[in-house]
Length: 414
Image 1 (spheres, rainbow, N blue to C red):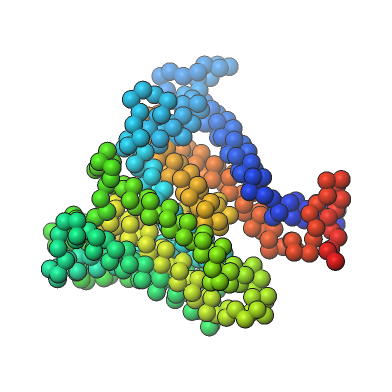
Image 2 (cartoon, rainbow, N blue to C red; image 1 turned 90 degrees about the horizontal axis):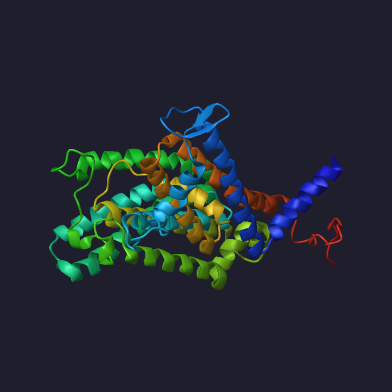
């Protein structure tokens, strides 16, 4: 038993100490493994389906072609670049980048809390209240008739809307932070419960005060057209995506990475997440850092809600998609690295857009498509999950790297 435990510890230690290149190689290998497993599943499932034509093998007809499924799943979201007439501004690419943009904000929200040693499961709730605040604020400011229309109106109202979403989302994120810091309440439980409260609270406010009188659907009054984030370049027009929003998401991602690496606040945040006792010994106020990190996490969730309103719908709708929950998987897949969040969000955007492409181009049922995308996410995320687990149970500060000659690596530095 002790030998098995030692081998597990060595494996976890290797994962924790893995370089960026090694982690990328592991993720790519996991992706290929998930594709192979999924291909077998698709092929076998096709033997139980009914179809007029398919591959006849051993007296059975297999209806689904795994190669076609994965072709649509991965290349469909990119507008089929291997085919003629491909355009970088196609509708499917715009849909993929739209999802990527929103997931970058949500992934950063979760990653900030994770890096501080906190589990923010409430990004969805922070996104919901932030989105409502954005829609209500923009409509209210526009109604005051103090902001000109056109380009100048966009320059004023869009930043105001994003700021409103960030402030309200940050305040909502601060609630579980305060409860954690001063009442030792488990942030997982409080953020989950606050998700339900956010849904009920916004639904009540909508029906009581902010419902669009000209719509039978539960939604707020639409923001003025010039206050929506413009869909540029013109090839993306009508697809609810803007390169301006995507560019802002990338800049924010780089800004959070710089905050972690180059500022005292980022250093204190990371230290309090990795070694809270050492951080306290070094003079870091743990309670203040808990509230600050959860507030920043909530603000990023609120920004996701703001862009969902200003870029996608032009108003706040009651049925908000699960962008915040997807952000948890994005952050885990990225190893809570702000720069990795962009790649993970793009993978999720491809899978979500690809699922639609597979559904419209093949006869594969939606349930099987969801299983395939789930397999890919599970396989790619598991190495990072075990790496995070290893950081909790393996003392990498005192153990030396595993030797190439097969030594146990259990010696300590002097």
